Amino acid sequence: DDMAQVVISLAADKMLKRFVLPQDAAGWGGPTGRPRAADAETPATLKAGGSLTLSGNYEYLLVGSGDGSVTLRGLTDWTGAGGHVLERMLHDSYLGGVSGAAFGMNSDFVVTCGKD
Image 1 (spheres, rainbow, N blue to C red):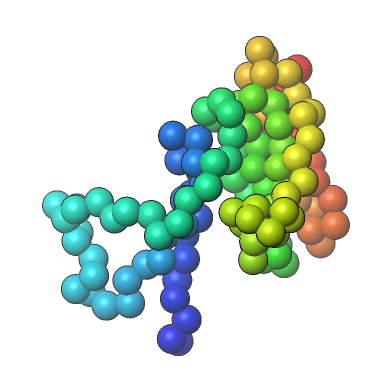
Image 2 (cartoon, one colour):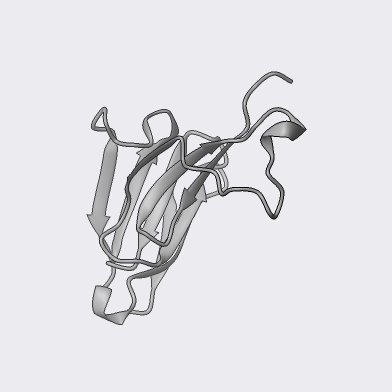
């Protein structure tokens, strides 16, 4: 399989980061190697904490934030540069914001929970 393997993370610095994993063993630094820099990144949340979920059909990313917002991003435009980002404030940030978010079995609905 010649397709690149990609990891998207919600980092502690409140950024969504994409890493393209190396294809060969020489690209891996191991536990003592230098940390890899992200290949791309974009702001994700205003307050640290939350969740990151990939839809079952691999089309969407769902970001639940400590600030109470839930953001739906298309996986092909995960940075939002094309304007394909839907964001709604659903939970109280003073009570901890979003503690979990998930897609339905067919990726046709979203479920969120917070401490409010």
